[in-house]
Image (tube, rainbow, N blue to C red; front, side, top):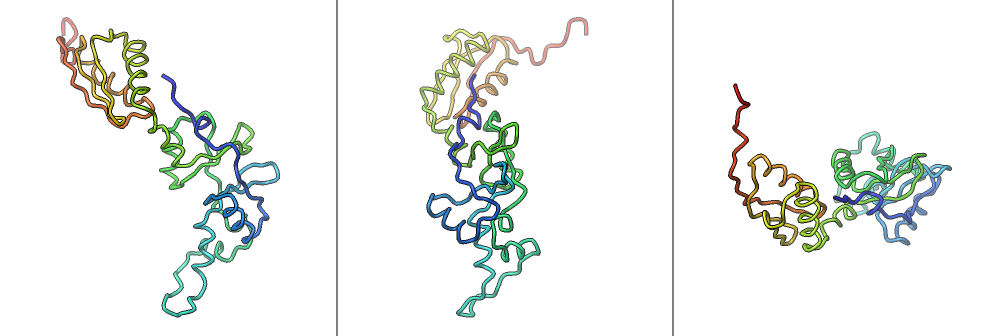
Length: 224
């Protein structure tokens, strides 16, 4: 089975900011390119952090409301420092949380979830910026067509990996939801097949309706 990697999904033409870029220059950079965040890089093009609209809005939030109706929010020390920052290296969220081009979608998604970030700069073996991948990029695997998913499960999972004849198990795919019908020799094969199907890019769920003549899950070794 072929799994799409970060390199397959990332944006390669990355808009980036120098560490000394001013607040207004960053706002213009985001606006001109229609993006909501950019990596901040050093002189060797290595990511130092990411500056986003949320980082920039802290400055606005720290201003007094002319109407006097809204109180200035309480900011922690690090938030206060950002609100008072004037350059990219002072405004950015750091350090940069990065991915590698050869990572799987699962690896990148888990890092985003753990670190609570919406995008990951992608770096090569020298830690230089080569791309950026966002949540929406990772979700693109779920745009794979049902026919493509069906063929991958039928050929790669059932025939090539499990060695099953196509007549044994039939596959139905609707909107990424997979249903398996048929029979396999041993009960222990069913969770293996279902797990392999779940690993196919674009699969939303797997429902098995498989039968078996031999329940090897409860067999004890001879003589025991």
